[in-house]
Image (cartoon, rainbow, N blue to C red):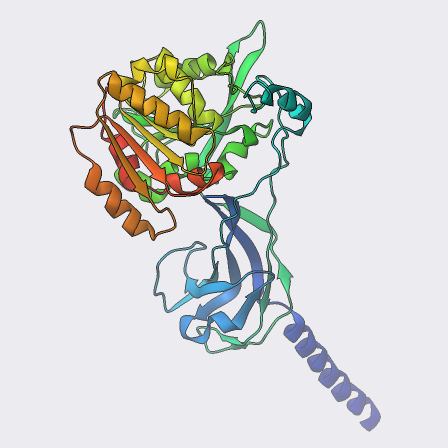
Length: 430
């Protein structure tokens, strides 16, 4: 009898020990979400959100309690909702780990390696860009994940201590702002199959009884791709206008067409995609409550060249244009003299810099009032914006920002953070 009782007690003790081991080994982190944002040089990981099984005390956590593989942590805090925000919550189920922004990289793969032989031939004629209609060198869209380790102990709202845990990999990824766009395909002609992929941001709390401006962003040749979201992840050209900061004061639609072929070339020829884009804009203006007196176009490199081409052929269509790191045939730019244009280039851009110098000189000769300013884009954003604000005046209809030094890609890594220039674009009506 005594032996049976001993075995029973021993079994209960062992069961409790086993349950304790299981309890200790079970993770209190129930979900790990990677968060990406788009920066001047493209999309990258910006934060990791941990969901715990109980609310965590804010006072019990610090940057030192966590590590993210291959990244530095800038801030750690709790929240009651799974999102980044400025908060001083005392407790919450969600631990937000914000990461230090990586330095921007001014490099890229050759967007058109298949066109190398033709480019060499064209260089002898002073033409170096890709062939009109070529399919480029599309890259697969980047995928992102995060490996996080809880290195220190944290405390729950009921004072339970959660000890350090082993590395956990995120199970899903959230793409800030990119996720707010819808994707669709515009079919111009059912017979010949002509179509155009596009991304569209619809203002939050959209009211069809109100009218909204529309910004059209046209991407560069390096993003020519069959991947419909490629234009959204490559930089701020479309994203900046759809950001919560911009939309707060400037609710608007943002259209970002995705071209799967080169639509203009260095011989200043253009494909049917430009007129197709105009038709798409008209179609969307019928479907949504878009203010046709406040349609703006912007683009970088190939996209900016497309903007100049459209402005020269549709001089009364856009209310203003923001043209970045681009060039075009000066001989067709006369119609721009009466339009509202803001050019941005870098001194180190061998194509765009001399071309825009020539174009702005021609526009002045045709009656435009042009204001130039040279800026060091490596300054703090506040200083740049302060300098830009000082030159804006009703007497000018064309502005020309020149970044000191820089390169072709460098221009668009900075241009879409020059908010006074963007606000000037939005101040214009047809």
